[in-house]
Length: 192
Image 1 (cartoon, rainbow, N blue to C red):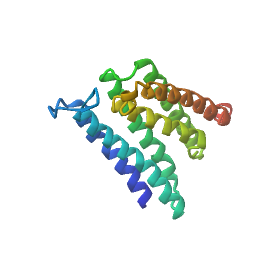
Image 2 (image 1 turned 90 degrees about the vertical axis):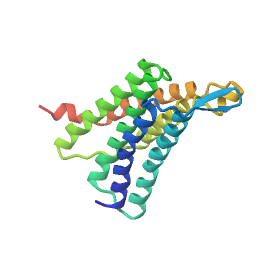
Image 3 (image 1 turned 135 degrees about the vertical axis):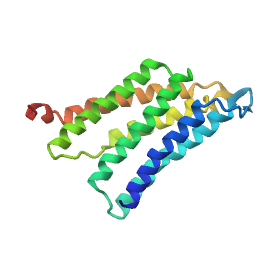
Image 4 (image 1 turned 180 degrees about the horizontal axis):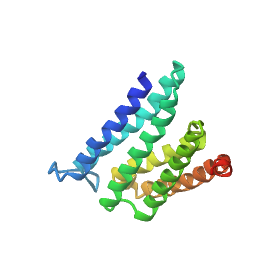
């Protein structure tokens, strides 16, 4: 397994740590920033999530720079993104920090695209993420990070950045899903 794929696997391995920090009722107290109170567990969870998310850029950088792009990496990288984002979104719903209907749209798109990727893989075609898919992923990461941080530092100026970024993420999720299916409709035409 090459270095980019190891970094991708490390991203997957950070997910249980994120879940434990966010869902186990540790009594670590709160941090107050201005008038906003942020549970320490949410701050630590946000930092773990952000760290895990940055590995998406790091593994891609090494894969391209050193010509280490593999079919395994093309499969694992988007899978790791989907697992991380889905876990974080479900946690946000559990903690009443995100509306369930938006999370259902995002996760449904991820399942649908993963299903299409499996159909294409069965036909011997591995499809790497395109630019619109990458924008979708980063808008999701930004929205999740803002929600995990309870909209800090934007809360201090009463700007609803977290809510706006979640709407942007839903928009790009729908657009990139539609684009992905439109570009790969041959999988439906040729499948039996």
